[in-house]
Amino acid sequence: MQNAAFLDPSLHRRLVDGLYLEAMLMADEARSYFDGGVQKDDQIENPLRRVAFACESLKVTTRLMHVIAWLLSQRAWQRGEIEEAELDDEKYRLGRATLTDLEQAADFPFAARALIEGSQDLYDRVMRLQDRMDQRSMPSPSPARALLDRLNTAF
Image (cartoon, rainbow, N blue to C red):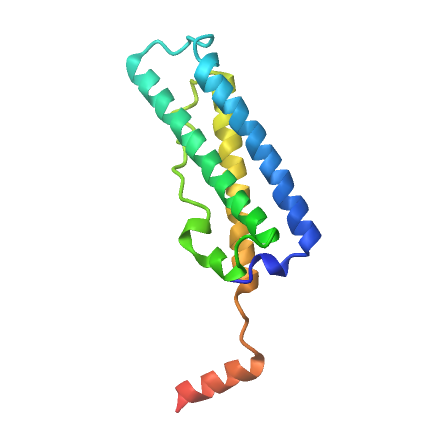
């Protein structure tokens, strides 16, 4: 894959550490809110809305756990615990997470909306980082190779 190697090692480490800290803090906030804070925000009276709210709490948790797992994989690579080639394995990639329909969550309490939007933003940033690292790892064809390929297809 060679994706992480294209970043300066100290920049990669700082970036991963900063994102990891943010993800862990957000996970702690989400756990605290969804485990205990929901009773304080009994603004959700409708049973169907309560189910939707519970589903959203699971989506937040899933997004954060995917981000944390990916960041831990990056840390393991930094420490030499896994080989760079192993980063191509699906288990070290950022897992897929379902996005929230923000219209559906519009009437949730402010704290819940903030956690939902924050977790989606963090997930999106990590996904962009992974995508950018993947793009940088793909070898770009040389101009000479591109010309030879065009000639071969022409004849």
